[in-house]
Structures are given as structure tokens and as C-alpha cells.
Length: 76
Image (tube, rainbow, N blue to C red; front, side, top):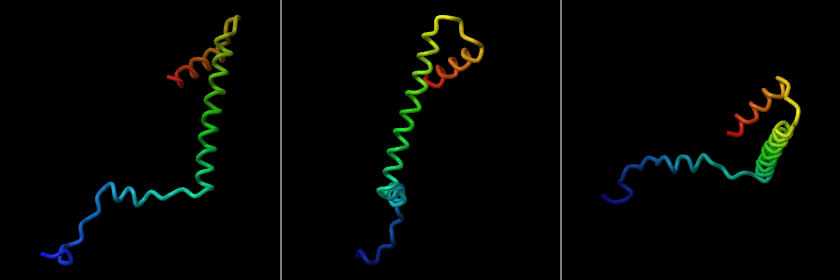
């Protein structure tokens, strides 16, 4: 059998996935970077809030205590 006589080989999984991935345009890349920065900023904000709650000398209110527990569970 020569090469032209062979039936077409089905595409592999990796090849199929690679063809569906397209390169990001400049705008999409910028939005992706911005999204990453916003995620980091949100995480830092939550860490600062938790630090303030942990540093309080007086007892925490029920709402502050539940917020502190929620923030701690998100970080784990």
C-alpha cells in the first residue's frame, strides 16, 4: 500500500485539543492579565481584613467572628 491509498487517520486527543485552543488577541491577553491582578488584589484585601480582626484586643462581635472564620476557611 502506498501513502495515498491509506485511509485518513483520525485526529488524536492532543491534536484535537490543540486545534481548539486559539491564540489570544492583544485585548484578550490584556483582560486575562487584568483579571489576574484583580484576583491578587482581592486576596490581599481579604488577608488585610483577617489581620485586622486577629489584631483586635477587645472581643469580636458575632458578625466579626463569623467573618473571621469564613476568611480563615477560604485561605485553607
